[in-house]
Image 1 (cartoon, rainbow, N blue to C red):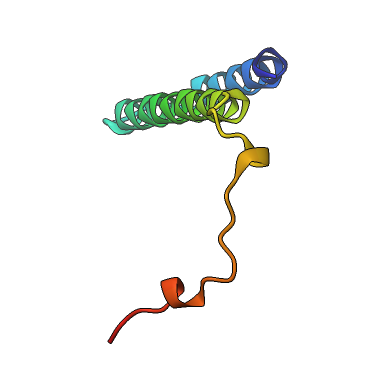
Image 2 (cartoon, helix red, strand yellow):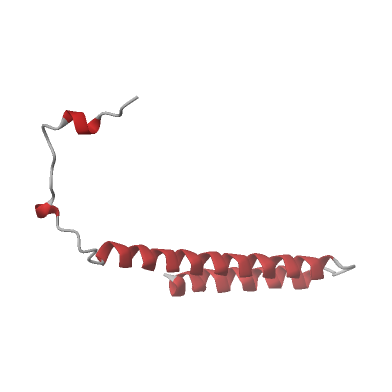
Length: 87
């Protein structure tokens, strides 16, 4: 999925750079914009990696044998006095 997304990302980034190069750059705006885009890219990469790690952890927990056997469960019935609290 990441490699499929790189193709349109590369095309859009080249298009954006081409449009920026045609404009006249004045002041400190491009530096701030470049820093903001880099920060957004870094944060998005961190969130993607965190989501992947969380997904792998959930898959591990779902596949892990916890040692619980549902066939050997003791069920207490007929003991209503044990279920009531004394006030």
